Image (cartoon, rainbow, N blue to C red):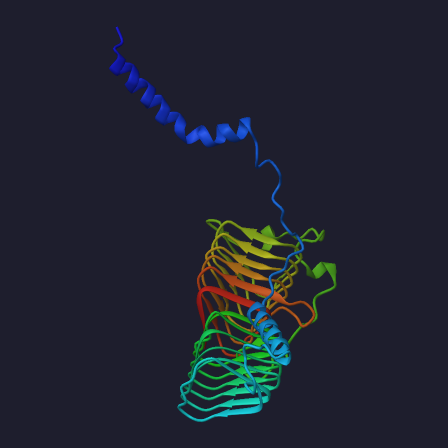
Length: 342
């Protein structure tokens, strides 16, 4: 015969078993969240969000100042601002034509409708210019920098969460970054003249693409890994469960995907995307017309070009992006755990 204590324990037991399902049962009986999520499929994240938002805030303050109620106060914005070496200041530095900040300075924010030059060994929060911007060696940016024209960054700088330019962004050796944006981003002052080589047109030269020559006939497979011989031309996407290695001067007229690590040897051309789950390594002088994505490190050797002037692309790593000297990227470089140059 079941006692009341036993019955109570059974009720408690089944109650605890059913408790996790209670919210779902309530939703099924009385649905209140049965509409699809409102997702803007046309949304594109603005790579220069910080600089654009900052300028909008400054414009609002300038408008208020013109009406006599500005937070910037009368006389805060000057035609030309020059700050001497070793100066420590806070707040906003604003100028119409030019801002020149000496070496070893520490300041808050800076904005100029013209050019900005920041001396070596300086530390600051953020800076924006509607003209050119020059940041000399060993500067530390706590937040971001943005320029409407060319930006040149010296060696050994720490670039905060974002460094962006509407035109070219030149980043020196030993710089550390999280996000870079430029058209292009370059790790040397000289642009790379080698750009888009001639692609083969004769069908007989191409592996795949209805020629009767398949990649299985020419590539080397080993335990799921794939190696495309040097000098080959592949006319379709390449997908492998293991590592993928594209031999020197090979051409892939499509996308390269590997669940392992993807390696592009010297002079490789890929007209599509490059996706390597366990990392991507471009040895050097590679041309990638598409995006690059990886859950591990992405390494770009000297002479590597990603994207084109008419089609900016994204390099994204969940860990780090390592850029050699002489790299050129048209678009966005994102390294969740930070990136380095050189």
